[in-house]
Amino acid sequence: MRKFRKSALIFLLALVGLYIGWMSIQLIQFKDYKALSETPSSLEITGAYHIHSTLSDGKKNVLKIAKSAARASLDFCILTDHGNPNYESLNSQGWKKGILMLAGSELSVNRGHLVALGFHTSEQRFPQQAESAAYQVNKLNGFSIIAHPYSKTHWTWGPNADYSGLEIINADAMFKKNYIHMLAYSPALLIRPGLPLLKMLERPHTHLKKWDQLNKRNTTYGYYSTDAHMFYKPLFSLLRVHVILKEELSSTFEKAKNQVFDALRNGRFFNSIDAAAPAIGFRFWGESKGNQIQMGESSRFTESMTLHIKTPDSLKCQMVLLYDGKRIYTDSKTLTSFHPPYPGIYRVEVYLQEKSPLDHNCPWILSNPIFLRE
Ligand SMILES: [Zn+2]
Ligand SMILES: [Zn+2]
Picture (cartoon, rainbow, N blue to C red):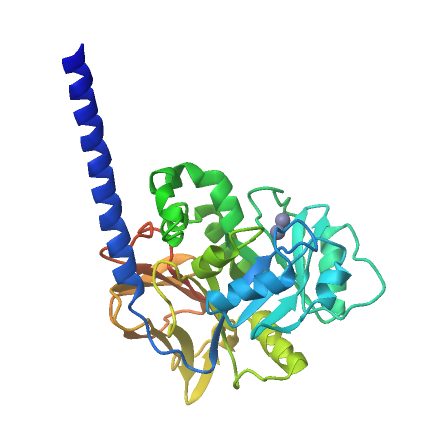
């Protein structure tokens, strides 16, 4: 009996040793990968979209969220507290701890949750009916995004309405679906929370398919959403929105707010899983006879049109160009040019290669489309 106990103990210790060894390798590889990054251009700013504070069901107040954002080296945050709209949250906007704190509201409408941003506040409440709410938000100069369409509150798709965006990845929904995948990495939550969080992410197949379908009817932009209620700093490092500005971010709050909302409203941004590797420096643009168009924009299709894709330097990655949702071209060069053969919707997904801790089917970078109309 004593001999059996001794063997069992040795076996157990060996297992623990193996686990610690395996975890150390994962942590070292994770750290090395993250160190590679480009110097940011002053026209590219990064932020986190879809955040809840104590003004609805979040765990931290606005000031503490701004502190977490500063520690995660963000430029801006977009609060989306529940409400119709949430005036307290809207009134909390401003520069805090050096972070541009913006706010919209997450509306509960008859089809699910709809995030309204950039609207002029008025005394009235938004209608319960999703299409009417989107119409009303647009009338107040704002724009709306369908939140977590296939989880939490499932969106019931209705007639064509003027929604501006769709959430492609929502961290809270991914956690609820895949937290089991994180379990083996859970001790790393204390040292490098980015690693277990990365392990819960998978390719959002259904969302991407729906997004491509929606774009055939209406211009719709894709968002990576933190839907943060707690664990703010790790989530701000995990999923990011990179906004491309036309001029440097103003220090005047109202102007800076308009700059960010204007870029989002026009799809001039891309999404990335920055906890896997910083995505600074990605660009996707079109050029025809000296005229440039950016992500999110539409242009008439001409044979002289060239699409250019620049992926971040010093990282091994694979760029995939999609035409109407289908892969049309792939390349691993840092700078790629492509002559689109047909009018249609072109967008880019970038995948990390080699030792990336991210699922190899999950897009590390997701661009917004360039629309080439007939
Ligand atoms: Zn929601
Ligand atoms: Zn939410």
